Length: 454
Image (cartoon, rainbow, N blue to C red):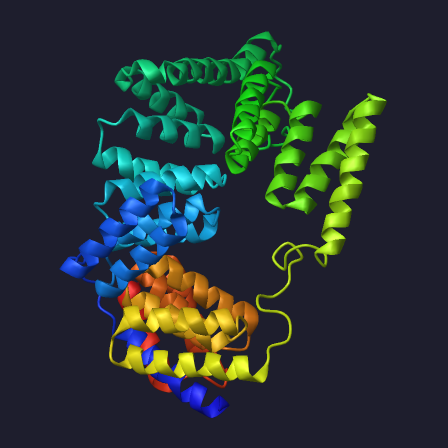
């Protein structure tokens, strides 16, 4: 069986190398109908149904950017943030002119505190739509959190000029407050320089330690209090994920705000992130001088530890385990392999949408099947979903670091994303690999592509 898989995997790599990077896909009538079902389900709050409808749209028309964007929105609502971001990235790659995908990539990246990615996405969005003030606010926030104060001030000022909606004036006030904070922070070094006596003596000074990028240089109690109130409102509405973001913002504004830390721990616990909750309550215990608060934190820690113990120590991801750990019945494994072989045939017929469905079924049954992730990576490249393909190839390497096939796949995925330096790195690694699954003809192809990318 292993030899059969090895041959299949080789044929998949040939498919990967032959994929062309074409113009945005034009949806078929069936794809449009499925997309509309997805939009209605998303609007109605039935997110699992929305995901299924968007998947149907992508089966009908692989590379349908609007369906990828819609699926990202549904996944984000289901708190599958990494998967959502991968979909938004794939949508921008499939159609770089799709404004909404760039906005969603910026928003989701900002909410997961990947401010560098958020800033780049908002830059693209505001270039495509300079009339929408929301894009400039997101851009300003991303610049601020990634320590680019001058750019942040400029973006805030643009936002203020463009924002005319009465319902959004609270954000105008926040933008003005942020501008004042950033300008005050920039003025401090200049004031210090004016009051410091100069000397002709040459001295060697030790530079100050770098400030943490996501924390203010000094506590901002008013901002922290406002963000905490935001979090409390979200908790009352049972929007626990949004609440955790607001409480985290409150802690960022004032790291010693014991109440914000405590409530951030509460929001994590409600979401099932017990390890993170325990960490926050431990911080509360070390900071507070109030015996009752300390006792409450310790009680919560004990309950969270019991929850962790009863669930076998938390989720596999939380425990840092490999995906798919645990025994698999022979009948389950056999069914998974059947799905895999079916997918290989579909890929060789370039029926990527159908192949993706088979591989999803395969990996649900056997989540540690490394060649399954390689095959799905090849399928996703066929669908022009390069960011998702890269995730699968990385996963395959995590499962089996001795394979060379994921190296070639990563090179192809990064080439599709126009990440030239990364593509070169992985082509070179494939050329230099001595793994048992390496193919001389693909090494030759990788050398040729290295020459093209120089």
